[in-house]
Image 1 (cartoon, one colour):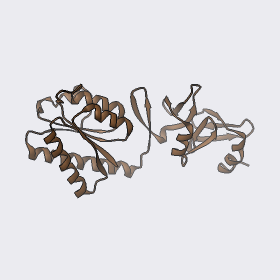
Image 2 (image 1 turned 90 degrees about the horizontal axis):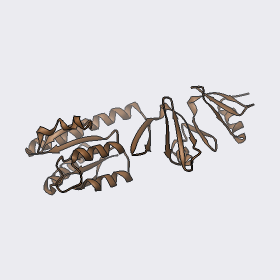
Image 3 (image 1 turned 45 degrees about the vertical axis):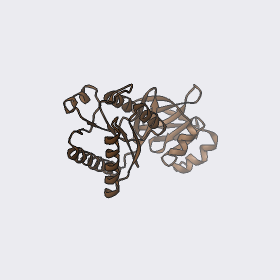
Image 4 (image 1 turned 90 degrees about the vertical axis):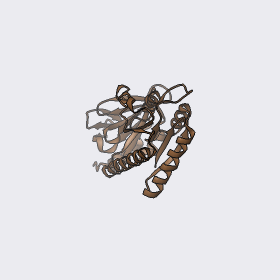
Length: 247
């Protein structure tokens, strides 16, 4: 379910947005929900940090009395939700070009001075998002979400070769086809999440099954399709032999 976040400093407009969006979600039966409706950007970021899913964000540009404006808030959101949908609902239509200057990749820029046009814009955005999400689900693209420093990344599972425990405590190395990432995590938790496509061959290695090219039982090594070698433990010998029909 896609969470929707509203950040608008005018309480009346904020409530009208929320009521209209809830009505649309109910009528169209979209897999969405209002996760937060607030006038404070810090509250939105705190909420997002606790539930880092792809989301929909309806943001005002001028957030009076707050520590950041809507564009700065958009930048912070992008660090945590790179694939989220940003929509600006504002009284300043002439500032639309600022979304490009800030590299925010906003889906739309809706003027709230005309209430009828605002509602039309909100409806159009949810329709477009609903269609995009349905298309993505149809393609069955799966991602592994990882936070490195202050940036949240969504790595396609098909690009990941394996995970390995780092020499540093409580850290994991993600080995993808084109890059390596280091992040805080537990290989056991990752195994529980991805066990259908990955196999725990060693206490320190979790490998994607379809990336295994060869299994060398003598040296107890797995050769991946990109040429990398990973060890496997003695107690995995029988399971790997059966899995890959090794005589």
